[in-house]
Image 1 (cartoon, rainbow, N blue to C red):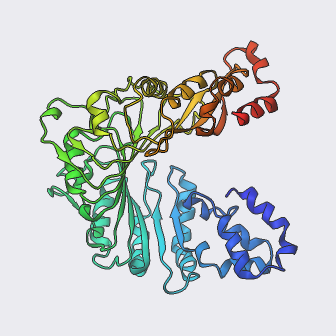
Image 2: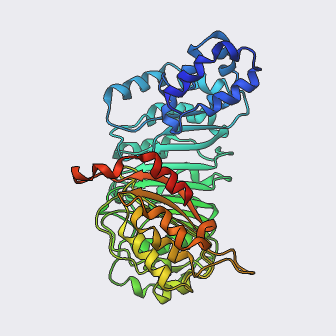
Length: 456
């Protein structure tokens, strides 16, 4: 939660004295910022809560969940970096963790981001060693070559008894020279018996350069923020060959390469949820959904557009893909977080194809997507031939409407096609920026616009 939320909570300080400390602690937990590294900001919870009154301070210090997570933020702010280093050296992390009691599980490390220009790794080693058996999540940043040896030699091995997830960020190529002639980089997490999730943020390296218990993972995230880099088809296949148990994955699109079609087919039975990170340098022919790895039990697919660059027209519904996705139940499209009004070209084309090929993806029950208000008929026409039946709930849609004119379109959809009303849900509103000052009248009477959409 933002600092303003903590401020609004402090207004009720005189009233909160009547609340039991346990209940107040539950409220405090909801006031924590969404991003773990923002807890170290003194204007956010938990530290801000301790500055309101003595009763709040005591209640906050008694709530273990406020102090069980310490993450240092990524970035190139040298002043902030040295402040956090001072916090570490003064025993700040130990004070936070000691407030949680002897058995409470902990999360610790640095934001897994390529924005790190340095790492606190050397100063974190004694803390990791002390609390290793209680750590449920660890995140490390390896921005330079020298940190590889610090990590490999300094971290304890064989004592991460409760470790459930790890995060690693590394911009290095992980060449044999950088790995001191080793082909792979050994990690102390390879023997963690409960490890189920791994997240790798990379610049160049093949994820399989890191020695992890790939076969026991149930979820995996691999991100290459640089659009020019990604997995090759060979690496894509090799990952799924090793990760036999993953049920949920977040990957960037692999890079198309010559010879990829000659790779032996692999069938991955466990995966049921796939989220693709789509950047502006992708030629998205969706081949990776069936070649060189197929996913017969895939139920949920999401496309997260991290860039507004050119995306090639999709061929999601060509015959071979329709067969590969015959069990797909939900399909979700996300606009870039920094441009929520952006509608990827793929979205409109997919809607058109689903409307035209109403027998494609027969198990599909829900689609979530952004869409322009003046094309809302497209959604209704997509839903119309897919009604509920005795053996199928029918197709429903959650639409985040992008407002850019044409207020009268909202009510017309249901006036002409009332049979889709119960399956057509508003998921949110976003205003598109007006390119012409003369369009200003389209944004008047916003309350009437909202009423019209809610009616839909």
